[in-house]
Length: 503
Image (cartoon, rainbow, N blue to C red):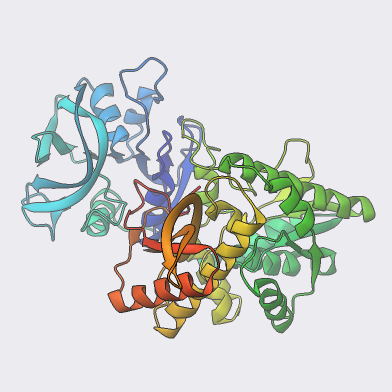
């Protein structure tokens, strides 16, 4: 199948590049720096961004022979600078450009079809291309006068300092569409739902014997995984929901009811006391994630001891889980995910991850094709470690109970207001307290922070402006109905620079 190869130099957006190309119907996959994954089906090579500087010792690079393969090349951010450096240009340290940045483009260039002479893009760099290589033309500049885009005179190589793949670049999708038309042209069209049978066969071939333990949570990722594995191995699939005590109000009961309605036979294991006792007093969020991962592994190990025929474990790991856990060489660890970076090394059972190469929106398309109900398809993401990653400072059951009630009020008010088009809506509690007045008496209570974001994929996100009347109702209910809370605040930071979850 025709495909694009994204050479990942450690960018947090590398998977987002692949996702955007897939949206355009061009299958894309990631490889580490090298040319081994490039074959006869490769129609486009993309150099991703990354946290390094090209002139640093040990900075990631790639063999220059890639330029001689005759395959079109697209460079983004670090990839833009790497192309310049490899081909005789120069890269220097600049004053940096971060966030929304206006660029001035040459609208006579076909790649900028549909763009105005000045457009808002998303920048995230400290270095800049000081001199373009021989045989290249500058086709866009930033407000600072830096090279924002260049192309080779033969039209085979394009590179951009800004990120067209993120939603903050207002016409980024149009630019990528233009690039695919120019650099690739006619190609085989890829659709995620067409991979279902192939995925089922791959799971069947991998788990050729033994039972497969499927850890489900009620979310779309683990649920689709459960359906795919069940179709692949039938009764050899052992579906388990572990109650870690960190779910929202009534969530466990609701999830179990939903699974029964869709015909999935799920076993419920209550391990909440173990999880909560181990988390008690732990202030470090990354350590908390590790504790949760280890405790999950111990629960699963207990199941395997009781049934030695279990030879595999299946999880709903997605691409963003992998990249944010630093599993790709050259990337920074943003936070460990319990199903990627959190599982201990001693837990060495065979691992099946049928969704590892997919994104959330693609999994939703699979769920729809598999006939799952809307309440699963459109379920808002909820972190695997549950409410534990929404508690800042020392973990305590008191803070957990406050947070659980505040979360229920938040979701209830959003539902009543008919506002369900968000990516995630969450409440956060920390150690800080605010002096309040209740019943004419001094009342020192916790601060609850509300965060609601919109996103396509969770890789980037924008905070959502809310009607002040709705915010007032949320604040009034939380401070009135939840003990020991005296202040409610609203988060107005996007991702980046902030992540969606607080820790």
